[in-house]
Image 1 (spheres, rainbow, N blue to C red):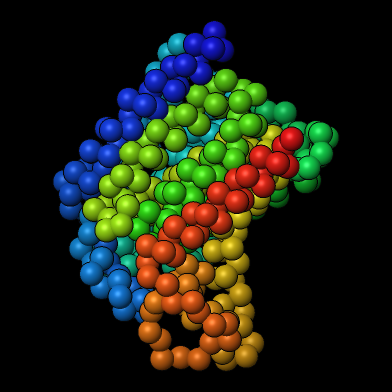
Image 2 (image 1 turned 120 degrees about the vertical axis):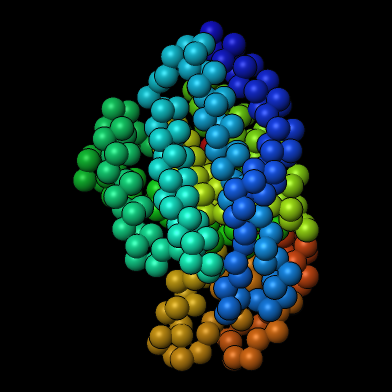
Length: 329
């Protein structure tokens, strides 16, 4: 049965790859969601205004459909159910954010404190689901598996869910960046996922639909993930890591996501404390871009064109994925 589940997950991932590539831009066009560029953002991004967004709905729906087929073969199980619920909760918050953004014709929907409050609320059902799973985590670079008391795993779950969802969302600022980094982080998680057939099968599904979306999302992008897609994929990545006991590997395989989130925090802290920005612009990928700015900043920017920034951050993401695999050996 395990071999059948793995094979079916791989077959569905291959079948859904072209569907994701074809349907994502068309669905985004159909729902008439358009990208709005923030006024303080890079001036070179003006050409992205009006590009169809919320295309990430398609990969999420395809993963959900594929999971339904897998569950039809062997029934739902706790680990894969947790991963799918984490994806749906992240995607739902992103969807509401996108809808508010479209209604207000602006680049953001919720204010940051509203987004964080929604994510904190979404952690509650995840805590109930996680309580049905073994509370064990694998320690990186060791063979040790340790059990966690409730006073440790509950805050770890909340921090992990919110951090991963926001990290992937922050990386979704350049064509193909967040999608490619998600795929690389997923590859880095596969040695852990392989131990549970249902999780590996969902991983195959997610990899296939993610590759398909990248086809349409590559520079120059014909469609964007939207917050629904980036937060949904972030939720799925966290859910797979948590339910496989690999949540402590997330900062390794998703190292670029960590960097993106930290850059935002450091930028705000530097400006509030000293009145001078640390980076040319945050998140970090904008600091690397060839973007003219009028304000002073402490760190020198290499001023690369957008495609070079994306590919080089993919290289960094591949390094992080390999580091995560090494930590498992």
